[in-house]
Image (cartoon, rainbow, N blue to C red; front, side, top):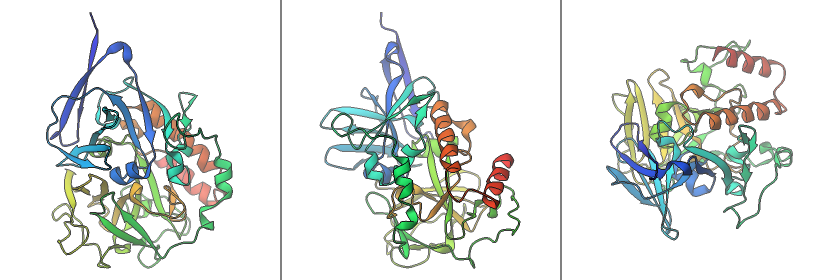
Length: 375
């Protein structure tokens, strides 16, 4: 008699759900991280976290989006969570591992796919191993493309600062229903910092301001709400003053609040943006056409909007190193992770990466150590 395990998945708002059964002996399911440009643009994450699965039960309240002639992706119509996709040529379904609440032991992450699409290595430079086992890194599709060595040193020698810094940073989802621009940091609009670099309370805007005056702060989050509203185990955010964001038309981004979430009029290019209140004072926005996670906004930081980094079109690559200062001392809300080994591997890899950065000395190091101890 076959011993089966039923795996159940649902989004943050519980509007969409599905389940499927597997032979218990087949667990953990082999999972991968795909870094292709399409996956980044269609989710807002630096990569997708997927595992092959049998056909799911009836799909409830899921919108479909054809990201190519071969792949159809499915996301919740209410909160925007990407839950699965279907590759027509192979007849293969994939589940977004972040939508399974009790998944420790259900998935085993083995490899990074399409790493060269990132230009800078993306998340694969941080997530090198899980439980001491190195993840394989592929230029493109496994076995068909070449395997990549750990060439982070070579990429570091090609600093993001060597790239021509564009006047504006273009941001867009895969279908371009949501499209806008970010201007460079402006000292008159950024929240001022203490000259002694004192750590502020984590709810204040100063805490979300980069030390590097010409960059914005960015961070990876593993909280339950981000995971279940996106389908990604890890969601990367850049913290941008709203005053520095303009629509594709050149008009300023309208004010955002829980009472009046941003819904661009049809005359703007961003007319597919939808909003969802995940909790009191919290507004999350996504593309209603392709499902990409776009914004997070809290009324506690009214002048700052969090932008999903996977949508950034930076010349240096997926991590947008010429624009962003990454918080490398921790992964936010690591305690919420369901795939804990995955997030622990990212945390350790980011710490190692952070310590190797040339500008991490003196006041910068003191600030980051204080920030970590307070967190």
